[in-house]
Amino acid sequence: MTDPATPLGQSPSAQPASAVRLDIPGDAAVIHRDVAANGARFHIAELGDGPLVLLLHGFPQFWWTWRHQLTALADAGFRAVAMDLRGVGGSDRTPRGYDPANLALDITGVVRSLGEPDAALVGHDLGGYLAWTAAAMRPKLVRRLAVASMPHPRRWRAAMLSDARQSAAMSHIWGFQRPWIPERRLTADDGALVGKLIQDWSGPRPPDEKALENYRRAMCIPSTAHCSIEPYRWMVRSLARPDGIQFNRRMKRPVRVPTLHLHGSLDPVVRTRSAAGSGEYVEAPYRWRLFDGLGHFPHEEDPVAFSTELINWLKDPEPDR
Image (cartoon, rainbow, N blue to C red):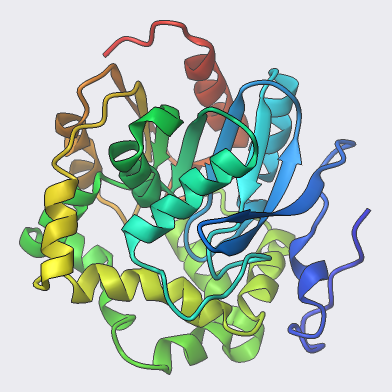
């Protein structure tokens, strides 16, 4: 058992470890440890034995968003590992390194550090963006790819630049371009904005208050808000820069592993039409699954349906297009 989390209102930064190294529901005892990869240290939560499934969280969350899938995957015979991305949760908060190419190398580096030849990557939101990137950059280390609530990086770029409704839906990303103000807003009132964003972006079944408290507390660990925003600053500010243009060209390289694309029909952040066009970048079996009545967090809003879809696909030896 981990230490009880610090109550809101009591210096959320005083005990960062207890805010991150949480237990998961049920009787399963998740293993917390740190691994070194790509010049940094990353916190992981691990459960089960078998083929590796690496779970990548999005904004404004940390590894704990995958608590239901850790148990389901372990019960299904997989080695389920949820990592905290660079700058978030229990992982190192480095002064730089938040461009997607480097963050993808973090992910593939963790796969190697875990002693595995490859992994099935499962990413949500920003974690999905990085999973797409890792599959294109290091295909030999990615066995399968599952992405929730995030289009392919080239599709994301095109939608943000040419679709006014998609650009408006991701208005928070434009707001992140201001210095310091977004960080202050995320941590004000014990991270109240974090809870509001998750509720606003969910469908009719948002995560409960206890879950929201955990996300708020984790965001209030010093430097987390800044590090959480930095990838989005790069994604926007690099649109017209040589490094961003080069990254976009690199993402022309097709994904050549079986891909499962999951999306909530009520997602207010990523429009269905923005996500659905991503299959053109996959030269392998590609399966699209739209969850009716779910929002931006389908893995939390209906964990049973999400986990069932994911596990059935992972166990399918020949997933069809």
